[in-house]
Image 1 (spheres, rainbow, N blue to C red):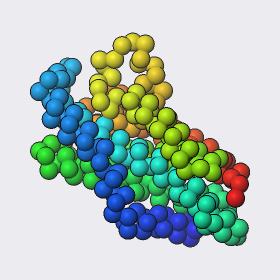
Image 2 (image 1 turned 135 degrees about the vertical axis):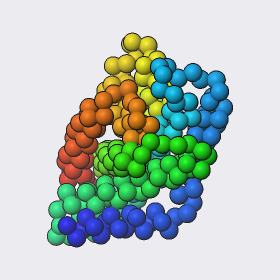
Image 3 (image 1 turned 30 degrees about the vertical axis):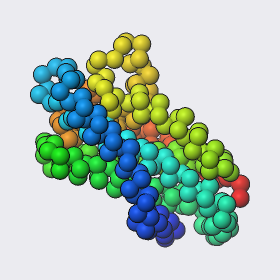
Length: 250
């Protein structure tokens, strides 16, 4: 498993050394959190008697958003490595492509969870209060699953592409509907009936609700159902990513 660790460490070092990448990846989540949170907090009435306001409701969704975008776009590193020859050198080494794919996936997931942790820390600084330390661990578990799931998804798509700009366009076309239908910005209970099935087939929905349960103690979907659904989707994405990466051309 040395190759997995080496590629994971490489991804982490590239992330830490790229300050512009860190700041740039935080821009949109911070904007959503502050603009929507403070702008709509006094306007939006949350359903039920949970006692939470819209800002509290929004934070788990923005954390999931940050993890989603960072993990998916980590797949662009595969295309970058193709263009500069690093991937070819890696693939001709006497190691399995599965290990290479897992190293890239775990590296992308780790950077994504770090980005999500930044949003979590920011939410604490602006006055949001959460339930317990155990809840934090639950939230980090779901953040990790989201990161692995969508990092594998990004690598699967990147394995079949050669152009970075095309990858970004396709990912934007796919990622924004995934985020928009996840219930990150609005309660699932308030959706029209025809939209609920689309929300329930979105794997990010279960990640958002899992994080929400961990941080707030409430969720629209039972946390064990969220864990099973997101865990199953993560396994499927890893298998799909491994199969497509194995057939990747260099």
